[in-house]
Image (cartoon, rainbow, N blue to C red; front, side):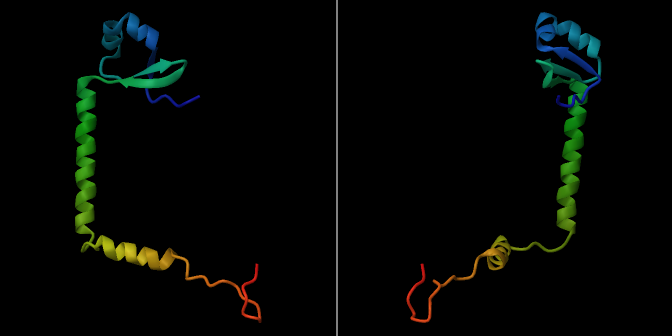
Length: 104
Protein backbone atom coordinates (compact mmCIF):
# COMPACT_ATOMS: atom_id res chain seq x y z
CA UNK A 1 0.00 0.00 0.00
CA UNK A 2 1.26 3.46 -0.87
CA UNK A 3 2.06 5.95 1.86
CA UNK A 4 -0.58 8.62 2.46
CA UNK A 5 0.81 12.07 3.28
CA UNK A 6 -2.26 13.42 5.07
CA UNK A 7 -4.04 12.75 8.34
CA UNK A 8 -7.44 12.94 6.64
CA UNK A 9 -8.60 10.94 3.67
CA UNK A 10 -11.76 10.50 1.62
CA UNK A 11 -12.72 8.28 -1.26
CA UNK A 12 -13.38 9.73 -4.69
CA UNK A 13 -17.00 8.65 -4.24
CA UNK A 14 -17.32 10.62 -0.99
CA UNK A 15 -15.74 13.65 -2.65
CA UNK A 16 -18.17 13.43 -5.59
CA UNK A 17 -21.13 13.00 -3.25
CA UNK A 18 -20.41 16.02 -1.10
CA UNK A 19 -17.40 18.14 -2.12
CA UNK A 20 -18.47 21.14 -0.02
CA UNK A 21 -18.69 19.02 3.13
CA UNK A 22 -15.25 17.48 2.53
CA UNK A 23 -13.70 20.92 2.00
CA UNK A 24 -15.43 22.32 5.07
CA UNK A 25 -14.35 19.42 7.28
CA UNK A 26 -10.77 19.64 6.02
CA UNK A 27 -10.24 23.24 7.03
CA UNK A 28 -6.54 24.02 6.59
CA UNK A 29 -5.51 20.34 6.68
CA UNK A 30 -4.63 18.46 3.48
CA UNK A 31 -6.96 15.64 2.49
CA UNK A 32 -5.85 12.55 0.59
CA UNK A 33 -8.36 11.56 -2.07
CA UNK A 34 -8.26 7.79 -2.41
CA UNK A 35 -9.14 5.59 -5.37
CA UNK A 36 -9.26 1.91 -4.41
CA UNK A 37 -7.45 2.79 -1.16
CA UNK A 38 -4.54 4.41 -3.01
CA UNK A 39 -3.82 8.15 -3.09
CA UNK A 40 -5.13 9.61 -6.34
CA UNK A 41 -4.86 13.28 -5.38
CA UNK A 42 -4.49 15.67 -2.49
CA UNK A 43 -6.95 18.41 -1.67
CA UNK A 44 -5.36 21.56 -0.21
CA UNK A 45 -6.79 24.83 0.98
CA UNK A 46 -5.78 27.89 -1.07
CA UNK A 47 -3.71 29.18 1.87
CA UNK A 48 -1.76 25.92 2.21
CA UNK A 49 -1.19 25.69 -1.56
CA UNK A 50 0.02 29.30 -1.74
CA UNK A 51 2.33 28.72 1.22
CA UNK A 52 3.81 25.63 -0.47
CA UNK A 53 4.44 27.56 -3.69
CA UNK A 54 6.12 30.39 -1.81
CA UNK A 55 8.33 27.95 0.07
CA UNK A 56 9.30 26.10 -3.11
CA UNK A 57 10.06 29.39 -4.81
CA UNK A 58 12.25 30.48 -1.89
CA UNK A 59 14.07 27.13 -1.89
CA UNK A 60 14.63 27.34 -5.63
CA UNK A 61 15.99 30.87 -5.36
CA UNK A 62 18.31 29.78 -2.54
CA UNK A 63 19.59 26.83 -4.62
CA UNK A 64 20.22 29.10 -7.61
CA UNK A 65 22.07 31.60 -5.44
CA UNK A 66 24.15 28.80 -3.89
CA UNK A 67 25.15 27.73 -7.39
CA UNK A 68 26.09 31.29 -8.29
CA UNK A 69 28.11 31.71 -5.10
CA UNK A 70 29.93 28.38 -5.54
CA UNK A 71 32.44 29.74 -8.02
CA UNK A 72 32.98 30.43 -11.68
CA UNK A 73 30.86 28.63 -14.23
CA UNK A 74 32.31 25.82 -16.29
CA UNK A 75 31.41 25.70 -19.97
CA UNK A 76 29.20 22.77 -20.90
CA UNK A 77 31.52 21.89 -23.77
CA UNK A 78 34.39 21.46 -21.31
CA UNK A 79 32.32 19.17 -19.10
CA UNK A 80 31.17 17.06 -22.07
CA UNK A 81 34.72 16.80 -23.39
CA UNK A 82 35.97 15.67 -19.98
CA UNK A 83 33.17 13.10 -19.69
CA UNK A 84 33.83 11.82 -23.21
CA UNK A 85 37.55 11.47 -22.48
CA UNK A 86 36.84 9.68 -19.24
CA UNK A 87 34.12 7.29 -20.38
CA UNK A 88 34.62 6.72 -24.09
CA UNK A 89 36.12 3.36 -24.88
CA UNK A 90 39.56 3.46 -26.43
CA UNK A 91 39.78 2.61 -30.11
CA UNK A 92 39.59 -1.15 -30.23
CA UNK A 93 41.60 -2.92 -32.87
CA UNK A 94 40.56 -6.33 -34.13
CA UNK A 95 42.40 -9.17 -32.50
CA UNK A 96 44.97 -10.75 -34.78
CA UNK A 97 46.99 -13.92 -34.60
CA UNK A 98 50.65 -14.33 -35.47
CA UNK A 99 49.77 -14.59 -39.12
CA UNK A 100 48.25 -11.13 -39.09
CA UNK A 101 44.85 -12.53 -39.98
CA UNK A 102 41.80 -11.68 -37.98
CA UNK A 103 40.73 -14.24 -35.38
CA UNK A 104 37.08 -15.17 -35.15
